[in-house]
Length: 101
Image 1 (cartoon, rainbow, N blue to C red):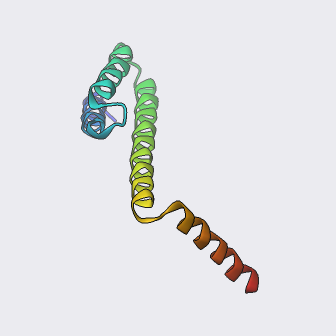
Image 2: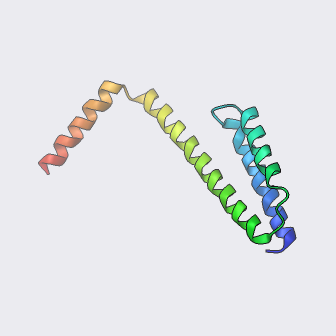
């Protein structure tokens, strides 16, 4: 990647993270401050290999945030549609069916 491409990739990652931060559980303001601080902390880095490593780490964080959101949605759906007793009974019935196979 050329220097311009790396710069564009960094800005793209920053924009995507800022967009994702709208739904962060601790609040959008908290997320935006932490994200900005992380990018500012590394703005002095000029080595292309180091920038690539930081980009990979940023993409990993992005995937982790996506997983956090998916888990939150799953838990909300589970609470909404399954009663805890009903879920336990369903798990017991599944175990019985599996044992009988």
